[in-house]
Image (cartoon, rainbow, N blue to C red; front, side):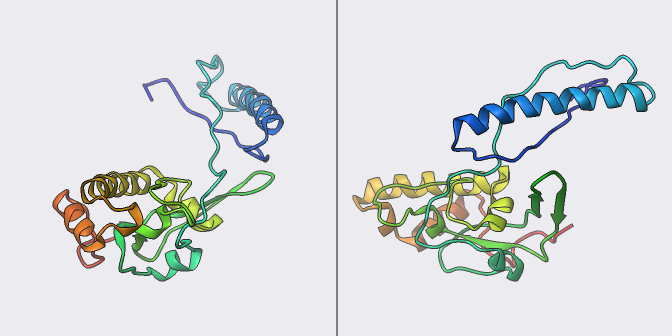
Length: 199
């Protein structure tokens, strides 16, 4: 964002796997953005001459997720759960974009482990799924879909894939202790005792 430039987001309901819903979301999102601009012009001093500079493409916060060897849950986040196959920590707040509009935001009490198994699709070999499509329930996904958690999973998935290739084993058979050692060498924090205090 540059001085004099502001960003405004909009949201709408729909099925992100349905092309008609996605088309309607594009239309609705642009209509809402224009209404927001008009509101700013009428009610906020200094915005009388504001205008739309550009629009970003439609983005969906949640769509398909795998069913993994483990599904991360809301309870795992709230309890700060630890896992033997930890590949990183997450402490990103839970945010919910509510149907019909509105938003809720909730801080976690502390970090929880991200287990390797949430990236392993049940019933498939040699496939790792990192990011917002990893195996998690709706609430847990609202936290781990954020950039830092996705980067954590991506680093682990890439490292595990290289290890599996070198060892000639499926991704599911990667030596977890060796993976954790390599991630630690790369700077990953795998222990909640090492995690910086939540600010």
